[in-house]
Image (tube, each protein chain N blue to C red):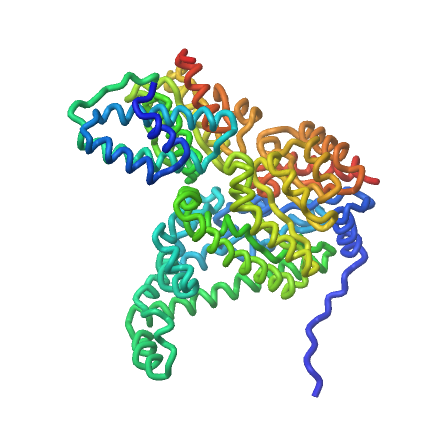
Length: 423
Length: 211
């Protein structure tokens, strides 16, 4: 019997030319033109006339704005829509780690992360001895009101026999708060299916229009995972003094997780580029010694493992990375795409110009409050400094282009590359 | 001059247990609690200076703040007199409307506080009117506006305008945050911007005429 065939995507010549242009820049080979790509998020939907709240609640209009915006802006790579999140899913999940427009923030603010100690200072032992159990029974109830009943479950390894699975497991499944939670989880899943179908459609339609997506897979620096998601900045920095070994053990667990999940995401999507947003590694937060001890080992191991797996790490270096350039210079040449926010341009060219492709850096302040001439001059400067060996992709410094950017400034950024960036 | 150099060193070197033990034994021996607080101030001054010179970073500030809090808790019950130290000036501080980030704001407010300023911290997501009210109530001469995201540009501008509209033209305004630069200072009409906590301290000192 014949198996039903999934529709095969045949990339157009335009699609292939864009991929080649982008990959040439990453490999530090001179492309036919300086490429353009941006991890823009709410800018895309605002550009299409939507409020931020509409973008998070009306999947169809979000998708339409995204696709139309990507075509109109004509970047070589389209931004992934996964930087957006579905308001209805967050509502059904009762998520406590975010505040967002259309829910508890005004309609034109972006969603914001709520940094708390989701794991307390004295809970490292419990987490390290049984990470999954700790996350399910302790952290999930703290992160989500819908999942709060998980806190009443017994330790999960108690359910390791047919007897206890029945007497304890089935009994807990019958507890009214758990029954209610399970019903809500089904609703969360069904809602998420709608959102994921929208995401898949955006990717497919853009590909058919000739635009590859920058990235699908995602990983975080292991230090940031503990710092942002578990302990908060204050907590993680105190842990550096009070319990450095436990902090490092937790970082190790999440280094393996970051590697495995990024490789899985890349394999499933067929997109080899891995987005790695970095938060507390920039200059100012940590000294170089602290960076070398706590931050860099996990991040470096992650990036090298991805390169070994044939993937392209895209570290998103938020903040000022000038003090860390020497660390970045340890990485293999032509394998990494580094997105820069604030940086000493000349020093960056000198130290990592032959190591990694330079992406980003058009100041957020300029895109939001400046004028097209300023942007044009700045983009020319970037091309003059970084263009000679091909290792440059033009974009804004932070958030791809910030949501509040003036469209004429973003358009000036693009036009300048088309005029001035042809090789 | 410090009363107890080993205590100052312990705090500066982030040896938390040593520092707390020393405080306990000093208190047990009946030493004047004020002497301990003097040592703490001296230690914080050294840490602040190192921060300014790029020899210590955020983890040291947070850890030192944590140690300082614990020492204050131990010392307070033993204090017989309350000392009213003369403050250098009054500052109203907060993260602007719409932005809920508090980390940078907390660090800057802490550094201003240990450098002798009376800081009224309004928290996060602070509307312009609240800044105006608080300045009027406290008589503060300096306002600090914090904002992490680009969304903070507009509310910063609105807050500066609101202060001016309320006739508070003499109040000096500083802004800071990850995406703040000279372009945004000009855009918002603030008097100055700062890249880190020590810039905030030196701006504030300059504005109240202290070096």
